[in-house]
Each structure stands twice: as C-alpha cells, then as structure tokens.
Length: 377
Image (cartoon, rainbow, N blue to C red; front, side, top):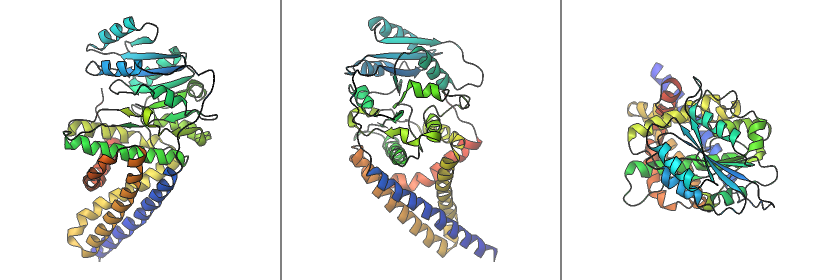
C-alpha cells in the first residue's frame, strides 16, 4: 500500500511540475519571436563609462584591456578598472596601461573592504561613484569584447530603457574539451531563458560580464543597498530592483557585435563551485521569480526522484521515459531557436549529453548552493 502511494504520488508530482515546465517553454518560445535589435540613435552621444572589477587577473587582463581600448564608439567614453586587493601582477599591468592611455584608463585601487560586504559589489559601487558616464557598460577582467560593443549596447537604450542585458558565450572549437563544450550549451540555455524572460518582463537571469545600465537608474534605486552583503548577484539582483516598478524598462541585446566571449571552467571542481555560487542568490529574488524557478526546480527534482524509483516500478519507468522525451523535445525546440538568435548552431550536437546531466547536476548545485558553502576568490 505504501509503495503504491509513493509510486503514484511521484508520478503525479512529475506530471504536475512537468506541465508547468512545458507551459513555460511555450511562453519562452513565443517571447523569443518578439526580440529585436535596438534602434536608438541620439545626438549628442551619451558618455559611456566601461567598468571592470579585477582581482588577481594577471593571466588574462591584457587581452581584456586591449579589446576594450579598441572601441569604435563615436561619443565620449572612459574605462575604470578596480584593482581589488590583487596579489599577482595585476597592479603592475594596470599601471602600465594607465601610463600608455592616461586619457582613457583610470585605475581605482581597493586596499580593504568592510566586513561581510560583497567584494565585487563594493568595487562596482566605488567605480560608479568615481566615473562620469551617463551609461555604464560592465564586463569582467577575463572577457573579450568586440570593437563595436559599446556602440551596439548604446543603441539598445531607446527612450524608457534603463538596463540592457548583453549576451556572453563560451567559444569552442574542434579541440575543445568535453567539459567546455557542455558548459557552452548550458550557458546558452541560461542566456535563452534570460532573453525570453526579459521579453516577457520576467527578469530571470543575466550575466555581469555583459551588462549596461544608466547611472541615474543605479543611483535612483540606491545601488546595491539591501543586497550588498550577498556575495553573488551584482547583475540579476539589480534587475530585480528595476522589475519591481518598471519591468518594461529593461531588455536583452541580441546584436551580434555586442556579444562577449568568456572562459569556461576547465575542471569539474571549478565548475561545481561556480554553479553553487550562482544558485546561492536565487532565494533573494522577487516572490514571482522565486515561484517560477521553484516550479522548474521541483520538476527537475521529481525527475531525479523518479530516476531512482524507476527500476522498481514499470509505471514510474514509463513516466520517466515520457517526461524525459517531452522535456528533450521542448528543450530542443527552444534551444534551436536560441542557437539561431545567437549564431551558435554548431553546439547542437552537445545538447543531448547536456540533457542527460541537466536535472541531477542542477538539483545538486541548487541544494549545495543554498545550504552549503562555495569558494570564490
């Protein structure tokens, strides 16, 4: 009797949460069909401040600075880099570049931070206070931007737009390790969800390595006040503030010349710590977003539960097969549209391997992220 109750309860919950998941994917698919490139063309061009927080980034920051300094933006622009207590050669590299480009590059040195404050939010806040740009474009010290990055991002700031979430991706080649290729697919899935969400005025996720907003907006919501002690979330938690009153004031940028490349994690340990960190901030989202993400998490959790029960029940096994097939079909239809939007069709062959690992990896990352600890420099 008890086994029968467990069996059919599991099947029922899997079906319930699965229907929500499929309904959300249909909404996402429709929303993706509505995204478009920005057309803002104002004179004079707004001044732009490019902000980069750096800590021990000596290995790659030269490439980042070279790409940022190559901007073709016709308006006034500047670069601010926060050297956040670096112990490697980062300070020397920044001093070298600042000497070569004194009219463009400004270095803000951070020696210490208040106890319990997020280092990155602290660095960004100090740079925003010091800079003079009307529009703030943020990227990370291990990313590469294109020459027309700023030009393209500024075109997204049509009247009423306060925040623009840009696209970043992990580049791959035929020689790329499996872990990099699978991360590239997973990252794309997050970007697709973020794009569709903003098109629905539902800001689910974004990335801090390609993000822009008006300085006036940042100041109007008192910056990172109330969330500055949360280690992660310098991007989407800020979006949540804007979503409270004006969800229509943000958009996702799909213009190819604004795409930013970022590095994938080369070891499973690094990837695991990153995913736990990402999951740790979700409880601070708005109630509506928490509800949507919770329903998705519960569906993935029930998939894992029924995987365990499947060997002992034909009914559960059948439910698992049907749920997995429907999820794969829905995911693939959505991902294919995303691959076309973001010009990454070559990743299609890695989608099924990611599907197999998606549920257990996500569930474990969320559980350990919310209730455990994560390492971050």
